[in-house]
Length: 360
Image (cartoon, rainbow, N blue to C red):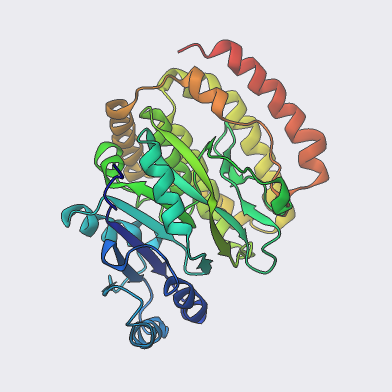
């Protein structure tokens, strides 16, 4: 007997994304998932940017195809993490079985929700299931077939800019799921917690995927669930502050204390290289601010509290986690001769060494 169709809360968090709403809503209106089994949430993190007016008009335009839409207005920029958490809490309180996080700069294919739910139901051990993300400008190219997690906390899209012909055809384990298009069972949220709001908008999906693995669950790719992502690599200098800050934070929070101690030389050496990289890249001030964040007592209270939460959910030791991580940076947007010729071989040597040392 077929399983009953589960209730899914589809969540879109917008910050100045009004221009993407037409294409996004046109795709949502074509979803084949039973209309009475999914609920639409739009979280507007930026007041007065035209998003509210745009989604209200589109709600009316596609009223016969869409379920009732719920708009959440925090009247502040809660980031990707805080915005999604608002709607996820609502889902948990209102009998939602899954939440599906969808970037505003996407178009979801008609059967994408059906396919990702199908994988979730067939794999109850999964804590997250990512759709296959393809480039919006060229859907023959992959944007992410699951994200890679470097053992020192860097994260990047796996398969970015690779031909769709090389994408997996079967469900497969991935290190962590991109937040641009991912299904999460609400039972996972109850088990490991929501997105980390301190991380705000960078590495929050990495941190969540790491916690999924630590809890003994899996992150999976649903390759038949397709989402077109109109992705643009952010050129904003400001992003480097949050990326660096959050990268180090998740490492200090999610590894066990012995692992952090053993990894300190690698963390320090890599940090020195990144200081030099920040000078060359013109974001030295951002790197300085990211480092100063760790001088605040509130930061260390956050990390200590986070470590307590990790201890409570941990079921997998670090030596097993290390096997799931990578030593390479292969992300297309950040590829550089220096990284490939110097950094990756250096990290490889360290990674092999830590694989021998870390046995806890």
